[in-house]
Amino acid sequence: MNFFSPKVYNYVHKKFRNLLLESLTIRKWYSMLNVQRGFTNEVLCALACKVRNTETLVLCNLVIEVAIRQQIVYDRNRYYGYVDLGINSNFADVDDSPLEKNALVFILVALNDHWKVPIGYFLIDSLGEEEKASLLNKSLELIYDTGIILQSLTFDRASVNFSMCTNLGANFELGETFKPYITHSPS
Image (cartoon, rainbow, N blue to C red; front, side, top):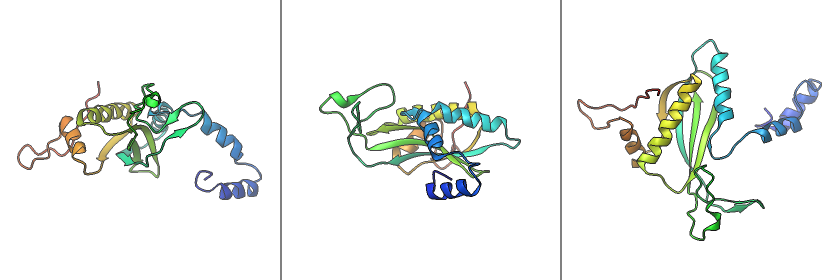
C-alpha cells in the first residue's frame, strides 16, 4: 500500500493506531535489498518461501524485455547509463562506451494469484539470440529451483526473440515439426 500511495498508507497507519510499520522502516527495508543488475537472489528466495508455504501450485508467466530512455547519470561513485551485464564491468572510463538502449527484464506474473515481481534485469545495447537464450535458460533454472510452475513466456515480436526460442528447441515453422514452446530440463 505504501508503494502505491504513501498518503493512503499514512492515513491507514493513523486510523489503526500505528499497527502498520512506519514509512521510514519500510524505506530502510527497501535499502537493504540488493537491486544490482543481474538476477535478484532476495526475490528468488522469497518466491521459494512462498511456494513452500502455499498449499496450491504457484503458476506463473514469464515476461521479458522493456525499452528504456537513454540517460547518463553520475552519483559521485560511478556512472550509470552504459551497458553493464552485472559482471562488475564499468565502461565509464572508456570514451566510446556503448549506451544502454534496452533493459532486458525478467518479470514473473502470477496466473493464479495477484502479484508480479521482477526476478532480474540487464541494461544492454542489444543482445544476440545465443546471449538471450543463455539468459533465458538461466532464468528458467532459477524459476525451477523456486518450485514455481512456469506456464508461458511473453516477449515482443523482435526476430531475435523468435531466434532465441528456436535456439532453445522451439520450431515456429508450420507443419509436422511445429513446436511453439520450449521445455526446460533441470540440470
